[in-house]
Each structure stands twice: as C-alpha cells, then as structure tokens.
Amino acid sequence: MPIVGIFVLAKYENQINVFSDFLDELPDSAEPVWILGQCYDVKTEKSNLLSDISSRLWFTYRKKFSPIGGTGPSSDAGWGCMLRCGQMILAQALVCQHLGREWRWHPESKHPAEYHRILNCFLDKKDSCYSIHQMAQMGVGEGKSVGEWYGPNTVAQVLKKLAVFDDWNSLAVYVSMDNTVVIEDIKKQCQKAGPDSRPCAGACGWGEFSGVSSSSPFRPLSHAHSYISPSWRPLLLLVPLRLGINNINPVYIQALKECFKIPQSCGVLGGKPNLAYYFIGLIGEELIYLDPHTTQSALDAEQGSYVDDLGYHCQRSPHRMKITSLDPSVALGFFCKTEEDFDSWCDLVQKVGLLLRLRCDLQLMFFIFNIFQSTLKEVLKKRNLRMFELVEKHPSHWPPFVPPTKPEVQTTGAEFIESTDKLFESEEEFEILNV
Image: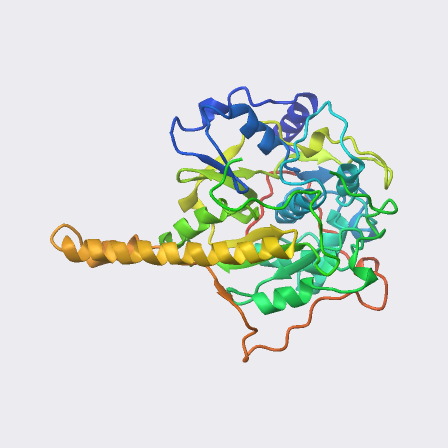
C-alpha cells in the first residue's frame, strides 16, 4: 500500500472525527435538509440532524478478511464500493423494519439485540448472509467476476437473490424492470399467507425473533412496534434507472430530489464517474452521501455475538456533491414495512407525478405569455419529468411475473463458484460505475 494510503488508514484507525465543523461545511441557507424522508432546519435542529446521519449504518472497504471463495481477494479495496453501498441501503431497510426510522445510535448506549443481529448479517464472513463474500460470489451469476466493478442495477439484482435465503428478516426485494414499477407484481411477491409468513431463525439468525419496540409533509411511516399482517412481507423496492447518457438529464433532477422527501425513502445507489456512493439526503442543489472509500480491518467477531460497532457509523462531517455531477446510472430505494406503507407510497408517487406535470405546464404557459423574454428551448430544458412509471397491472407483453423463491438446494451457491486471484492493495484503485 502506498505511504499516503497507510497514513490515511492510520489516521482513521486512531482518531474519531466528529461533526464539530459540520455547519461550516454546509451552505448558510434557509433551505431545509432532507435525510431519508425527514426534514431538518440546519440552524435550529443541528443535533437531531447529526444524530440521524451518524445513526445510518456505514459500510466501507475492509481488509484482512478470509479470502473470498477460499483463494480470492482478502480485501475489497478498489473494487467493492458499490457492493458496500448495496449493503448500506439494505441495512437501512432492516433498521426500519426492526428498530424503526426514529431509532438513533449513540456510541456509549446499549442497543437492542436486533441491532447487533442486523450487524451480524453484514460481517465480512462467508456465512453472513449479506457479507462481501456472499455478494461478490452471487454477482458471478450476474456476469461479474469476483473483484470486478459493479453498477447499481447489478447490486440490486444480487440483493434480490440473496434475500430469499434470509429467513429471519423475510424481506421481499423487488427490482423494477424497464423503468416500470408494477403494483400487481409487488403485491404478489409481498402477500404471503400461512405460518411461513412470520420471521424465523435462518442464516442471519440467533434463534427466535422478538420485536423491539420529524417533520415531513407526507403521512409518517409505520413504527417498529406497529402490527405487521402475517400476509405481508416487508418490502425493499429498488428502481434501477439511467437518467441520461453521459450526465444526468436536468429534466429528472426535481423528481430525484422529491425521492428523498418521501417517508419511505431508503436512499439512492449511485455516484459519479469512478466512484460509488450511498446518497441519503439533500440540501438545495446538493446531495448528501455516505462514502465507502475508507479501508478498515475486518472485524473478528463470532457469528451471533455482539458487535464492536464504532467502525460501522460515520462520525465525520457528511460529504456533499452537486446533483448535476451525479452519474446517470442510479438505483432508487424505498422501504415499505406494511401494505399500508406501500399503498401510501403509490399515492405519493402519483401525486409527485401530477405536481411535476403541473410545473411543466406552468413553464410552458410562462413561455406563451413571455415569448419575447425566453425561448422554447430554454423552457424545455427546465421542465420536470418523472423518472419511472407506476402501473397497476402486469404488462401483457412481458413474461409472466414469478416471485423469487429459495431453490430446493439450501445454498447460495457461493462455495461452488470459482473465484479470481485479482486483489487490490490500494485505495487509489478506483471503481467505475457500470453503464
């Protein structure tokens, strides 16, 4: 590893940076800060805002874990940043499912067993259901060799496949196709009758599960202790999109911003050329994100034990980037714990679509009445369009929808996949988003 890389890693491992300079790095603006569906005023709600950001689970590059596939890489530095972002968006869904969106992490507090059980799902071990080992090797089925760069869509497909082996969370991961979300298909995947509908012990489990018990213009999301119908599985909805050719098309920016205001928001997978980030919010024209490009040593913890979690929460100042710098390949994430949450999400998406069309119509009217002050080309550049379609019925020209199920052979197939000897030793190796 280069000297610079060693210095950066040593600085991280020996010093915890706090949010002391947070306000200096955010613009002095009256605009609200949105974090995963919750709204904050920077001037009056600083501590609540910082607590929310630091409570998100933060997964970064790791080194010195057991080689993937037995002979493959023992570090994901340089190639695994989109996989780590995928872990973060899934972990956010699990936190909302078991602890609730209002749950907050404090470094010196005792946290419920469910929290540590969630962390165990992501330990860098081959038997953790969402470990870097499982994700990298499941990606082989998506045409990606171990150690190869991933894009948002590939990670979404990997999460969908791995979720069927996770009996404890019993999470339904739906990945949209052709920029279209089909309500009928989602309800078919999430509605499940019978005794198998309730969570049980599994690959991520410790035994039987026991439940644990802001400001937004939308209807609030269900709390962790709310009743869950045995016929509905919690839903992580992922919508892979391409919002432009080489750069994000400005017509989609307003719709993207609205996604962070919906209470079901679970963040966005994406980045900019060469880098993958997990976007959790916005302020004005800038996105707020968690950056996985820090290398830590893999945690040596026994499966099912309490986890030393200090390295799983980012306590440094949040990163920001201009929304116009975003790579057009993204995957939107939404979590719906109950069927009521999903119905509410559908209503909100339709309302946002109506608002965007209304804004576009008003802009065209503005052009008509101010023909000498503007041009049609300029007006069309400023219009707002929806990013995806929401339809009630499964399109007749599509193949029949078959919900993902666990195969008869009780394995993810990870141990049978031949791995690569490709190994990155430096953080200076960068990841290119798959376009």
